[in-house]
Image 1: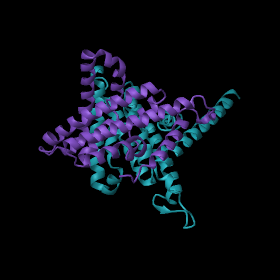
Image 2: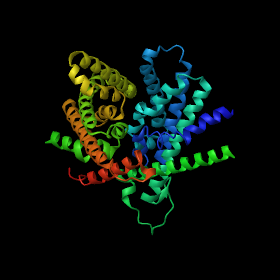
Image 3: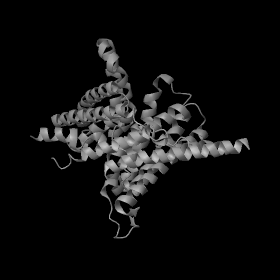
Image 4: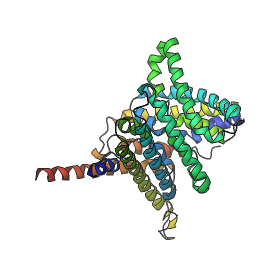
Length: 207
Length: 190
């Protein structure tokens, strides 16, 4: 059990897909102008990546290594289509808000990377936890960015007004430029945080 | 006139990288080096135009008439990935000089969001065949413009004294933010 926790945890902090690996950045900027869309996107990716890791792991012994990439892509595309249809049916507003970025989950580098580097070599359950951890890390990063941008740019979180009328919201946070700059600083903050944690862990190990 | 507006719009006003955030992985990955950026820009433009044409034909002659539009995403991604592989093989065989120059970029863009998104957007906006091609050329050149600008800035940045925690990808994001701010000046032009 502890082992699974380790696999799960590394996806969130030490190998966070957005802040550390800098993979699949397009959605991190495009759908994070509000926290709600960021959360939807994060959950969709979490679902796709865990499911795909399981499928890849289940079929790892029957798939010929030469054709593995097309097989992975087909599997990802199928799962994404399921997500698209479900969201279209039950949450049409969110489906419209995410727009083309939902279809683009198909080509997220992080999903293919996890299939290739983890799921194709490991058993089903660890693969699921790896996907779940990476997906959660992605989701957490997206929601952090979404909350900051929505709070600063519109004075609300998840559509609920937090800051009163006195707050004169700077539009730049909602615009693309603000997103880029914010992520730049968040990457730096993440680096300081992980360095600090590693140092603490090393000290504890020595003591 | 319609074509010109669409073209200019795709190049500067709705620049794919800086206003729609597509193709960021290669935008940050390749822009460390100016000559690689030029190659990447050209390769993306060429692949984008060809795959847009192919995807338009497949959508309007196969997917739509047979009521298979729900499979658009899956079909397009497989179509483009296999087309790029084929293109790579053909170029390798018939134009080795070209392959040596730009070949490695082709594989990198086989499954990339910017190449997939243009065909999808063309279908979504109901563009005709020619209009789709114009949109693809414009978007590709817009991408090339952005990545070349970014690479030139990053080459200068190598000599600058950057705070330790911002080094690498952090400062690149802030730089992209500045570029996006500059491109904001084009909005409302069309």
